[in-house]
Image (cartoon, rainbow, N blue to C red; front, side, top):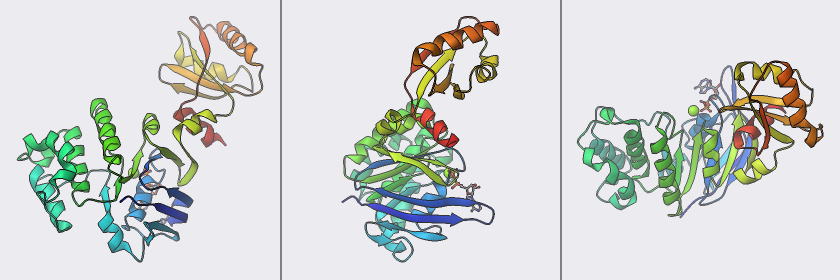
Length: 306
Ligand code: ADP
Ligand code: MG
């Protein structure tokens, strides 16, 4: 019951920006596929094109063998779309929102209750509450229920976890994994790099371009160069001081409580001594330099530099 998505040389130009540049991609039936990228990457534009809310400037998209432009009505019927700002009617209650979305697709909450049962049960105690009065996590669950109510084969979720607390984010991904087992194909976008590892495959996007498409494991394992993390008592000066040590110390950026950098040419055994002694000369104390393994964020930044 799941569907395949095929995008070929897709371009979308707005007046001032090329929002998508020559995007080609295949998503296999039943995949949980992530589009990872910051604001302006083109994630929402891509989803609007797939759901035929926008027309491409050039290129093509097919969903289950149907063309996004000529077969848009059929595609809309087999697609569930949860837009970025959740598109709920805030003046309507939880129950009224669901009934409204069900009626658009000529079905009813009763008829398809089993499809959303797991998710809806969590918000059902609040079914008489206006959507506008729900917490972020509950809004997200209601929006997901609305997107699922007509039994879509392709589910498209635009930044479903943005602005949602960490616990709800985790729960939400667990729900997606569970839903995936029913055979549905899921496309999800997120600006959170750490969510990449929860997808079967991801596309890393930046300024309208796809920089890499693969499983998260393959992307992190193919990181080119040696990656290091440093910590000192003066994190403020660390970025610029690291920059002054050696030309081979590149891709220096803040990573949580540490700073990451990459080397390719320097002898591996010499790096930590070189860095530690140079930083000490510049007045740093409590210096810790150690090798570390790349995460998606490192790969993203390295790809951006290419
Ligand atoms: P993302 O969802 O990854 O943040 P978007 O698809 O919203 O990215 O935006 C990609 C680029 O296209 C941005 O530069 C944005 O300003 C531009 N853009 C998006 N929608 C429109 C529009 N309707 N008109 C003009 N420019 C747009
Ligand atoms: Mg967006």
